[in-house]
Structures are given as structure tokens and as C-alpha cells.
Amino acid sequence: MEICIKKVESSQFYQNFLELVENPDILNSFHKVLGLELEMPMVIYGIGSIESYETPRFQLSLAILMKRKFNWIGDVEVFDPILSATESRVLESLGCSVLSVNEQGRRRATKPTLFYMPHCEAELYNNLLQANWELELLNHIVLFGNSFEMYEFLSEIKNSFIVDSTGHILAARKFADEHVLKIASDDYFAAFHDSSWHFFSPALDTELLLVKN
Image 1: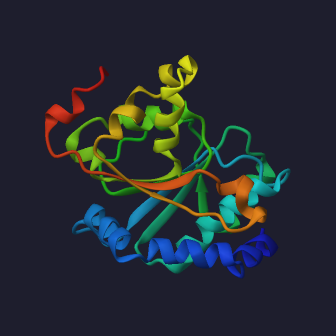
Image 2: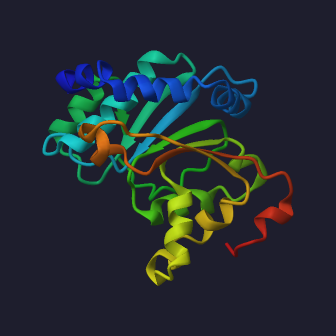
Image 3: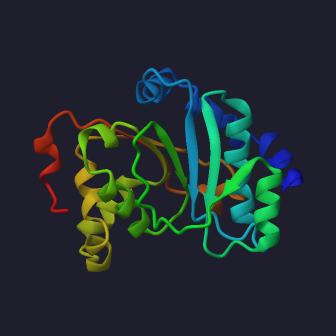
């Protein structure tokens, strides 16, 4: 993991990533979510096996580098049902807490929270939104994960499975601010293609009536 972290840190991909995060518009969105809080926890769902595959190692490396870089990121919690005892110990040595309960993505954001969910199943994003389908809770969420714009495109080509599992994702498009991460290197394509930052700012309860809970 340390070798992988160093590789990511020295890459052009990481420099591009930092430029995106430090863009004034995006930084302003982070601080808007933070409000009066000094930091927000990072919750990582579905990271995969860091022992077996390079893609999860890249994804975790980026999360660790963010934690080291930005003092407004607080405690880091991780869950994936496939994590081994060895992988859990590695995560803990990197400063993460490994959750013992499968929340199925349904963590309620009662305080500002960064959800780091690269390439999770659509159902997990949908579960997260459904569990937080209230004005105050949605405004507490920063989400890094699959592009919601991509899901909207897929729904328009009549993929019924996608439509069935993305009701809240598609509804959230109406009040989501999405910033797409551009990938300039094949090395990081598998880990981060079609990934975006998402911020949610519904202003009226009527915006949440678009789907049934």
C-alpha cells in the first residue's frame, strides 16, 4: 500500500485531481457543506480487496492522500464485506477504522460527511440517497463516486435494471452539482473512469417529491 500511495502521489493523475478539488468553486462547495464544522468524516464503502487487485489499492491510496492533504477531512471509516482480517489490519495501520456492521450504504448524514464510493453498485448510491432524502441531510453530503450523469444516460437507453435501481439517483440529478474527474492516464482509468464529485443542494421539500421513498 505504501508503494502504491507513493506511485499515486507522484502521478500526473493526482496533480489533476488536486487541481479539481482545489478549484475555487469546488472548495466553496466543500466549505458550504462543512458550515460551522471544522472537519467531516470520510466513509468509504465498497473498496474491494486491496490484497488481490491494483484498482482498489489505487482507490484507497487516493483516499489516504486526501486525508493527509486536507485538514478538514476527519476520521476515516471503511466497510467492504470481502475485507480479510489482514486487509483490515492494514487499513487500521493506515489510520482507518474498519466497520463491523454492513450499513448497505444507508448511513444518515446527521453531520457533514464525505462518502467515498468509487465504482460502487448503483444500489448503494441509491440506498445512501434514500436514507438521506431530507433537505438537511442531503445538504450534509459530499459524494465521490460514479457519475450520476452516466446513470441518466443509461436510463435513457431503456436499461430497465438501471432504472429500477436508480430512482433516487435520477431524481437527485435535478439538484446535484456534479464535477467530473478527468483521467489522463491509462494507469488510473480502471480505478476512476466516469467518477465525479457530487454536492446536493435541494432548496424546497417539493424537489424531494419526485420519487417515492
